Structures are given as structure tokens and as C-alpha cells.
Length: 132
Image 1: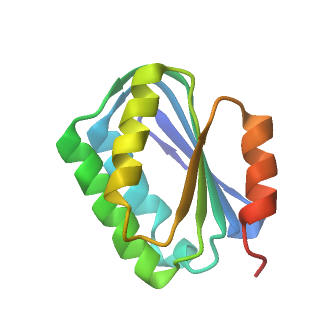
Image 2: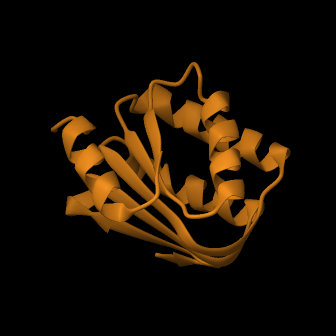
Image 3: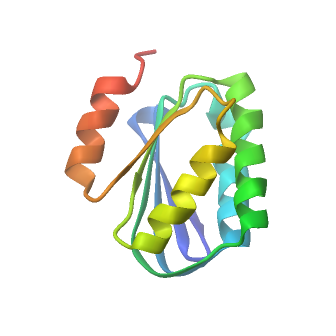
């Protein structure tokens, strides 16, 4: 699936979701991508997500956008609480926004962590994602 600046790929027959963000990414795009990721056809079989923001040139996301994204995550975690989410990012501002998002997920059972490179993120996912 391709969605305005964000590409979503299903991995391992839907066990994994890869989110590739490139260029200027707006909060609305991320919210819409989350709605697609958490579609009932995919949600129950998901075990992990790789969110790669390393190719973003600008991350135009507000605190309200982060709150809306976190609400979608919290709702999805009720259906499937065991998803692990690795976020790959290279810019300091993105790390700050990811930390804000993680704070919004305090009561959510998703396990999340930020990384600077994909290799380390994939190793972490392999260690932490539950098998079906």
C-alpha cells in the first residue's frame, strides 16, 4: 500500500508491518496510515511493526497529532496487546516526538523502542516479538 509520503508493506504474511516515511511527513498522513495498519483484516495477526523515519526530511507533527496517533494505538492494543514497535530515526526532533508518543502509550501493552539503524531494530524485534 502506498499512502502520500508513507509506504506500508505487510511482511511475513501479515505478521509484520513495515512503515516507510520519506520526505516531508505530516501528522495527518501518519494518522491515516495508522488507520490502515490497524484495519481489522490485519490487526489480529500482527506481531511487530518497523517504523522507518530515517528518510524523513521534515517531520511536521503536532502534539495533537501525537495524541490522535496514540489513541489509535491504545485502541488497537485492546484487540492485540502483544505488538512490538521498532522506530528507526536519525534526527533529534523525531526522537523527541517519539518519546512524547511513547509517554502517551503508558497504559498500552505495546512494547516500543527507538533505534538509529535497521539492523539493531530487527534484532530487537526478533528477540521481543511473540510467535503466533
